[in-house]
Image (cartoon, rainbow, N blue to C red; front, side, top):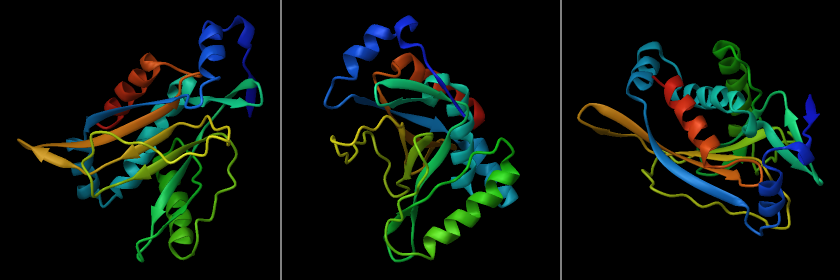
Length: 206
């Protein structure tokens, strides 16, 4: 379900009109997330750390309303719920696109996500997920402890979905940290909203 946002009476009306004209309206922020406790929990309980942090990031994104905004034609819609469209690595070194529904309950999410991952890993090609606009585009680069990320994009394709990337875990003084990159459409949100997401995600990971 989605609801039409009243742009004319929106506090960010002028910001929306300004940034939506940009050829590149996305901006990105990279931070390190403390994942010491959550990583230990996953190892102790035999849980996929990837699915754990993917689920926690979806919880955070669904709580921050602008992460559920999408531009469709000239309108902005607020989706009731957003889901995940992650890249899934295959044994042959390629990857495919997946679509994973968001469930508040991790056990349900975990079961359904594993089914989708298995399907993608046993297939060929990219398999673009027919998932609509109410997704976040996720990727994981567990080989690189990055400090910045840029994305390949087709500027002719009008896209307003956030893009979140996770990197390689590092450990210093028994503290594990994981880099995360968040790219969002500036017509829909500002740095304060990305900051709210980061704070909520960090809280979920403790």
